[in-house]
Image 1 (cartoon, helix red, strand yellow):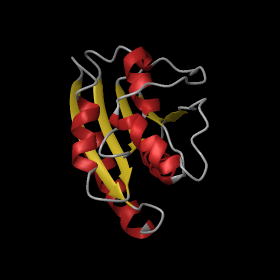
Image 2 (tube, helix red, strand yellow; image 1 turned 120 degrees about the vertical axis):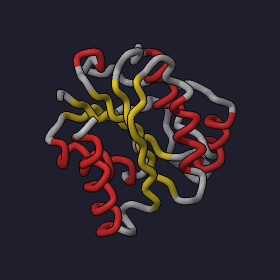
Image 3 (cartoon, one colour; image 1 turned 30 degrees about the vertical axis):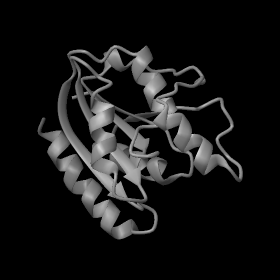
Length: 158
């Protein structure tokens, strides 16, 4: 099954998970690059507010078409119990109807399941197969890697 991992990561936690998933599945990645500066002293508040307001953003052009893959694995950080504007923009621009889709998120709190549900709602008509929430993946590296490996085992059988 031809698979791609599409992700956005601001701090590196989601990138850590995305790279482990891609490594486990032996597949390609596509990193979403948000053209808005999301760093700085107030970024926690402004980024959370953008997610709460369900704002979109400007992305650097992507190079891979998700229609060319059998399984699309999406990865997003959790911002105020929601996917990031970068993921919202990507999903608004791409047609994943009929595609097998799996979602993972990296979070620092307890709102991962809610973010998964909200991300899923942005992909009408997809064949949703699995999800994974990884809390503090770079802090709990061994635990995270084990969880990711188990999840990838499930993805291989979809």
